[in-house]
Structures are given as C-alpha cells and as structure tokens.
Image (cartoon, rainbow, N blue to C red; front, side, top):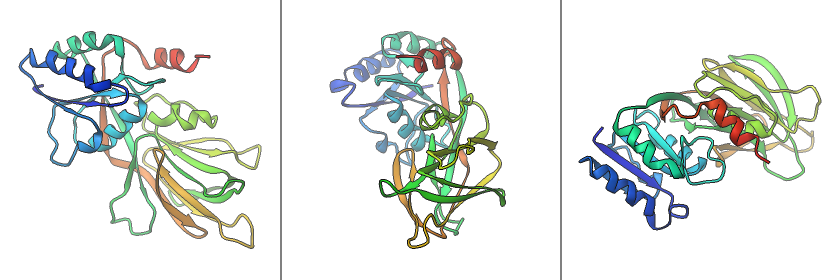
Length: 275
C-alpha cells in the first residue's frame, strides 16, 4: 500500500494535529498521504489504497457510504464517544500504524443496503450502512405499514416506525429498539418495529438475498398516513398511503480493517455494558 487518505473530523481532531502526525509517520515510509476534512471530498475519481478515519461512528459511516464498491479498506480510529465501528482507540494509533506497515491486519467485508422510494427500480438506489427507517412525520401520530418479504406478506405494523438494519447497524438504533445484535460479517437484514402498538410484534431476521417491500397504509380513515424515509439518519424523502419502499442488499460492499487485537465480542462487552 502506497497511497493513504486521512479523513480528519475537524471538531474532534483539532487543527488536524493527529492527522498531521499520522501523515509524517507514513511519509517516513515513503507513502503518499492526503488529508481531507470531510468524506464528501471522496469523489468517483478518488484514489487511495487505504483510508484512515479519525472520528466517531458517524464519520466512519459517511466514509463507508462514499467508499462502498471501491474496494478501499477503512481503518477507523475512535475520536468520538462510543466508537463501536472504529477499530483503534486514539492512544493506540502508533501501534495500529506499525501493524498496517507490517501487513499484520485482515479485511472484513460488510454488506450495505439499497433503498428505492419509487417503483422505477432502474433508478439509482440510496445506500445505507446502518439502517433505513420508515417513520412518522408528526409527533404523536403512528404509521401503518404492511411488510412483504420476496412478495410474501409478512405482517402489518402500527408503530412509530419500521427499521431495516444491516448486521453493522444492529448495534445502533436497532439495539436501542430492542432488536437483536448480529455479528458484523453476517449476511442478513433485521426488520424491527419501533414502539409497535401491539405486544407481540418483534424483530425478524431475514436473508440478505431477500427483497423487503414496505407499503404505507391507513392508520385512521379520515387522513392519509405520511412517513419520512431516512437512511443512516439522513432524510431521503417522504411517502404517503399507498406508496411503497423497496429495500434489499446493495451490490456494493465496504471493507473494514481488522487488527485482531480486540474481537467483536470483546468490543460489545466493553462498549455496550458501560454505565
């Protein structure tokens, strides 16, 4: 590997001090290094052999969405609070770089999701690393949504929202909504209702090869339901009664650098059992 890009979150890596330190370290090995302040600078013409992300989970997610399908691995360094998606804690940057220079690391391929808000499946879909959410627009209102898996009717949910998550996103909003945790290398999708108006509505794990269709229904006869569709927390659009949303595994994947020092289960215990 000869070309590195460092994505440095400006508010967390003040004046890009850590990014500059990493740059000097890599340049001592005659590597070409570029520092960017935001993942939006990763364009279609972007070229690198590895991207080092300094920030929290949100920074890693945005970089992963930009790099999906490009076969450029991501090494996440935790400059945030939880940092579940990052591989390295801030004090261990130097040891992580030593391992990378020695080739002592593995790549873990992870799936993403694709979403279409319209029936025209030929248009480019939205990509999500963690989850898509189909939820109410107005506080105090619920939505009614019928869910189909491979055109087979699953169930109708009356809830605040429906969440469709990747294994990577299983430890995020899905976990907070009492959904199951999946190991990140798995190939599956999780359907989780958020605050369902029924005691027997629970999460369901389906194959990554399935296609999920969510159709907005009527909660009350005198007005149409209106729902917002979000991908990784960003508003993608709105849908109303009768509209459908198609969600499936994206063709693009992304690679995370694994150094092997801390397993997924070690990380889960240490980060999710905190007071």
